[in-house]
Amino acid sequence: MATMSMIQALNSALDVKLSQDPDVLIFGEDVGYFGGVFRVTEGLQRKHGEKRCFDTPISEGGIIATAIGMGAYGLRPVAEIQFADYILPAFDQLVSEAARLRYRSGGEFWAPITVRAPYGGGIFGGQTHSQSPEALFAHVTGLCTVIPSNPYDAKGLLIAAIESNDPVIFLEPKRIYNGPFDGHHDRQVKTWASHPLSDVPEGHYVVPLGKAATVREGRAVTVLAYGTMVHVANAAIEESGIDAELIDLRSIVPLDVEAIVASVTKTGRCVIVHEASRFAGFGSELSALVQERCFFHLKSPIRRVTGWDTPYPHAFEWDYFPGPARVAKALKQAMED
Image (cartoon, rainbow, N blue to C red; front, side):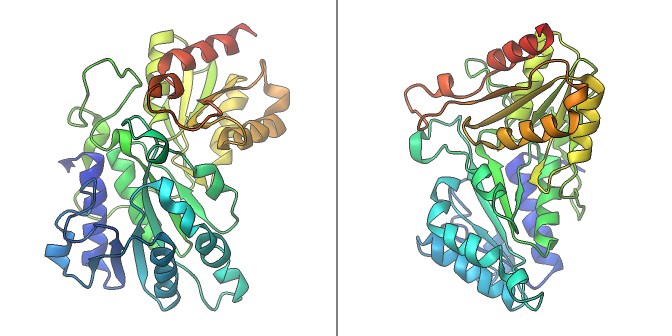
């Protein structure tokens, strides 16, 4: 075991797979010589060579199209889109080709590609470096969408994604690359060093896709979250004093429906937290799922705490970003109804 940040854990996962499987290769904008804008691929080109880890032009559609072709020929490419905001030029390739290839060819070809992309806000990235597009991909049949919240899960989930025969969108919450963030932006920044989930095995291990984690058990209300919002929700629970159960979804497709239903059936209340804007966000699907499957167990309306339905602001980042105060308010409202 070694103490790792999320950046180091992701780097370790890539290193493990490059070492184990000659069919794995990594490419994207600045991932080779420079080691990525967030240093996730640092040192991999020096260790594994320019044919296994290399730079591409600034062409997101070309990056994903190349990955799909490689996958069809039996390779397992890991393509990086430098920021999730810029994945949209590749949307047609992901939706019309990667997600459909195995079905369209009757299983003769498939696209075992992993698309890594830093996503989310909290770093003053403004409108074009802060967005959370997970719901767009969750809606596309044939794509998996994975969002880790800590270094241990990040490494295990990334290895599972690379080993999957389905195309995986692997969204990395950049606000927690270097440490957990509980939403208190006015407090001292924390690192992963003292967090229990920074203890990461140095070798190969897998965290299964579609298996949620119970971060804390409780009986009063269920909180569903993923990515950075897991830490924000945990802080809100502690500060509110409410006996809430916190579920880290880890992946939204595949989704651990059984864990969600079991928890809400037990607590009878549900609060959903995500950073993306509210309207048609993934919280809408979660709310519908809980309503359909747990209706007779619910003691109060389902609550959602999300970003606002506006472009991501630069000057008012912390008014947009769901913080612990907003989550705690929703928890109290759920208990009062």
